Length: 282
Image 1 (spheres, rainbow, N blue to C red):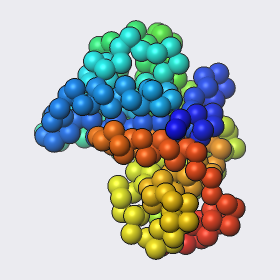
Image 2 (image 1 turned 90 degrees about the vertical axis):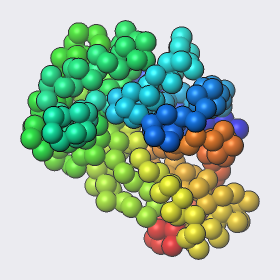
Image 3 (image 1 turned 120 degrees about the vertical axis):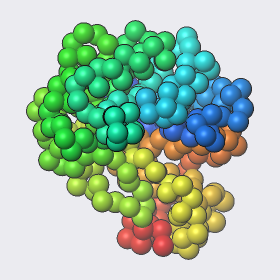
Image 4 (image 1 turned 180 degrees about the vertical axis):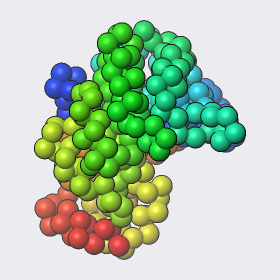
């Protein structure tokens, strides 16, 4: 059982990582506080033991709780671990928590993430989402400035379409895209195609539909044939769908984490991949 069985991918042509990561959105738990912080620490350490070397989080998760837990559990970090976080979503006056892609907000979120994660440089800072009031060029431009100052190593974007991705790439090097994508939701197929052509890592969020796919008959039939769970087959399908795919399934349970990582070693036949691709797992 190892995330390395998913294969490797290069981010920005220089940083190699396993193609199966861990999404830390669920770490904050109920009311943004984990019921047992020590269990969250054990979960993160178990992920590292299983070969996971990409942990995806965000300034907004908690808020701040996820980043703090990651630092408590893993700092000083293993030398090959990539901690990816996000900025561009936070408190914005009367709007409450909302998209905030203003350059000053991007910088503020980055500085706070550096503090919480106990880092001098963030491995991968991703724009959390598009701010309709701020051109993506300005948001990414702020990230490029932070990169020039040595505060971030690589830049990614989230929840973008083909046009926004092209505009972001015109400003700086984009090494990752994080969009919603799974067996039953492939609206970002065109973005995935662009990522494949450009060698950009594609991190599908909601990769197993939070269990929504578990009752799909076709998916369950394939799972039964492999003695696997529907969630494991959904992850395996993503891994075989594209060489730039880097799923980041999240969980607050160590047994579920182990099941997710075990999916890295599951190999579907071409016929099974095609059947699931055509039917969406239904």
